[in-house]
Structures are given as structure tokens and as C-alpha cells.
Image 1 (cartoon, one colour):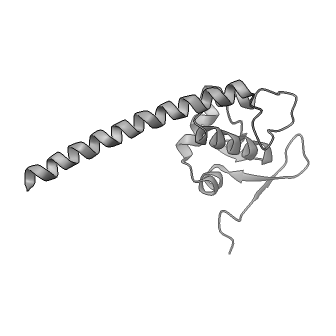
Image 2 (cartoon, rainbow, N blue to C red):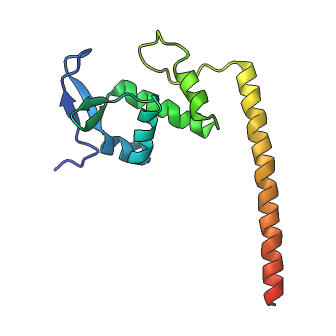
Image 3 (cartoon, one colour):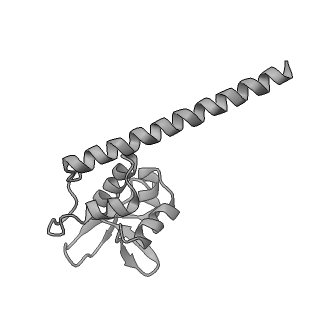
Length: 139
């Protein structure tokens, strides 16, 4: 018996006669994200799964968009920024394997992440100092 991740729904699609489609549950398992996150991305207009009744089905274009959303989040971009990057080339039939980033965007994001790292390092040090005081008070 095939696992649900191996099972592929085949649906008729206007642009393609027969295309492999995955359910929302399968996509969630494959990419390790929640159903809630997928629905939120759809609500924000980042994903546009095919709807059949109450069911959502994801084709290769939507899977590519999800991969780009997850990559953008990993790089520290906001969902609004990711949306802009995804929609930067509306003539493209589907997202490419990488965002089109210019030098200004890259440098700006690097600065943002470095500032965030500094803030995190400070917070970690404060918590370590608090922990040392707590351990010292028990001794």
C-alpha cells in the first residue's frame, strides 16, 4: 500500500490535460509545515492552490512557489517582501529556482540579519548571566 506522501492525485486542469497534484496534507508533510501556515499563505495571496469543493490541490507551480516562500523566510525576508519577490516577473510561467535579488537588496538583508544576530547575542548573554545568578543563589 502506498503512503499518502507517495500517493499523487491526478486531476484535470485547464492548462494541462493531466497533471500531478498533491493535497494540502501531503504538501504539509513533504515540506514540514502546518496546514495553518499553508492556509495563511493562501489567504495572503502567496499560494493559489486549485480548489475542488473544500479540498486544495497543489501543482508543480504552487510547489515551486512554496519552496521560494520557505527560502525567503529562511533568508529573513518578510512575507510582504517575499510576495514582491515572487511577483517581480509576472510573465514567468512559474517561479525560478532562485529569487532575483539586486546588490542593494542583498546588502540590506545582510545588514538586517547582522543586526538581528547582535540582538540575539545580547539576549543570550543576558539569559546566561541570569542563569549564573540563579545557580549561584542556590549554592
